[in-house]
Picture 1 (cartoon, one colour):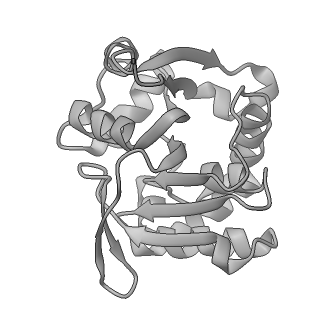
Picture 2 (cartoon, helix red, strand yellow; picture 1 turned 180 degrees about the vertical axis):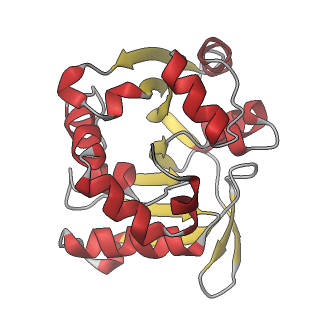
Length: 219
């Protein structure tokens, strides 16, 4: 089982995810999801960790851009290095410090405070981070507000199996239920869930996906 101490070292965490196949299994899963990012679209990867989700979708188009945020600067550095290894131009990826409790409030690396504009992202990625928010419900609602009509929110969340619950307890991760999450998202979005199978081992042991496509405003 992955030691919680690795969360203090973004580069060690990233190496572990690559060596033991977790990153590759996640990307195989992402490749089959019904998510498209328009050319010129903006992606937000909040609580990005080592950056796998956002960088995967950034590579799907030549004119998309990515903002990756995390509370830990060492993870932001690991995400930047991952993008560099994959040949992504530095000008296509911006980074910042943000707490998942207020994902719209960003502090840039040069200490500039920024409030993200509502309806400014074509895709928002989150991966098992909502459970660290002061209020997961409020954080989720904030993320939906940042999403453009027709845009997608992807949450690669902890599943509710016995193993998933064990891992949540080990990492002091306290999230709302997947049912409650879907209920909140359905206020503004069309929501679907996507389970992993054994083609996506080892990620399938602990993860499942909730996808929300934001509705167009009613006239």
